[in-house]
Length: 184
Image (cartoon, rainbow, N blue to C red; front, side):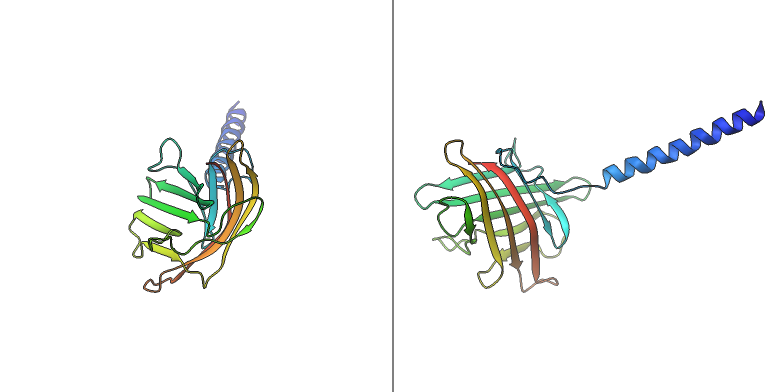
């Protein structure tokens, strides 16, 4: 009888450790949002190899604010990522340099007509020593519009760019594997 209890105890113990390790894998398996074209308000990328996903912020109920400027045809996307546990709020803002007229490859603008920087990554609330990075046209900048439906006001695409701040310990931030699916 005692041997049965021992076998039962060790079986339960083994299964418990297995379930705990599976739970940890699920928690640590953040991935970028899928490439979609339904206007479901997603934006994600890798910032220096680490996953960055818009998830909260000033633009409630969505962490992403999008605007299309009809007079210039430029597209602007602001996205916010927050983390309570790490006490970080970062805001990424992207703006096309040229008029978005359809599916194709475009560049990001460096500044707008008022001289304001319109592409960058700001640490709104963070303990990071270098809070702001901006786009400079001398560095990589690719915006691929993969889907545009002006009737439903949906735009989807991918992006990659380098942001700089020469005053920081890490002077260049590489944004790769970027993707978005938004309404404007």
